[in-house]
Length: 364
Image (cartoon, rainbow, N blue to C red; front, side):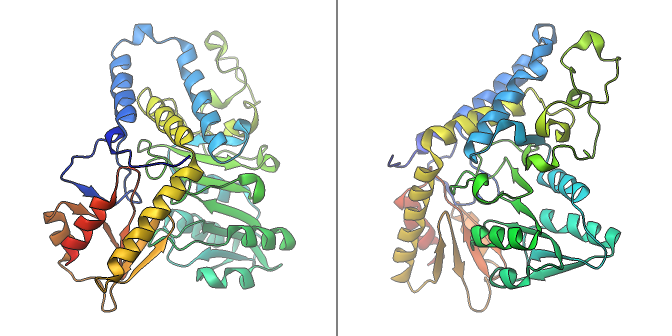
């Protein structure tokens, strides 16, 4: 399937060049409508049956599982990536004097949890450049915690190679796919990772305050970091809730966050995931990669250095990004993010070649 510009499906004004999906996703009209309908539904609690606490959650769980080629039973719904990674850190063995390997300068959510776990176990946390990760994974490493795509400018980590090395050395693998899931094809079956976390509000085009945690079946008997009532067996029988159960619901559901079934966020997540699956992640990736490649070609003629990395691109400045440049771009209604010594450009299907022209004109 070849995807053209889908701007009419997004709530993006014509005079705005929004190139910041890696910061906050542009809003799909269908997702906005689902959120409004959810708020209005909550206005009439007398019409909300007990099944509402479970049915849509399971639909969303299954949709996300399809997106990463997984089983719904292996997916937990959590309030944030940091919640999911705290769960991972709570359920992986970190022997004393072992090494926890993380990618240098990756997003803090997949760092702080390991600093805490390392301090608790007297293990060492090592921050390494992406190209140094493979050589650092050996029998002394207990956990490797990395993104598939680095958030600063789209540098891809060879997850297949990292996963293979982790299997060889019996090192646990924890992935943060927040900057890739939904924009780059991924199959969890090909990595055999231990935990995979994804925030909903970026490339999944969903709401804030929602994330997903894929949990390998070998960890399904683990310890959740909170004890929500809905995670226990037979919790859908409201008449028997005080017949307290030690057993959890099946699969990774024991790790679900409390109050996961927001009557606003669940419909929004469902609408977003349905649209992504209708487009197809491979088709999305092809379209966004073509866009960033066109940006690189157009920028070359303007002597602007652009590094396209699939669905993202980085505009680099040898002396660093000029201090007033972000503000100047905003005045032109061009929106990007500054990360390190580069401008991060993160388009989506609402963008077309006119946005390339507007970006380059504003830079000029």
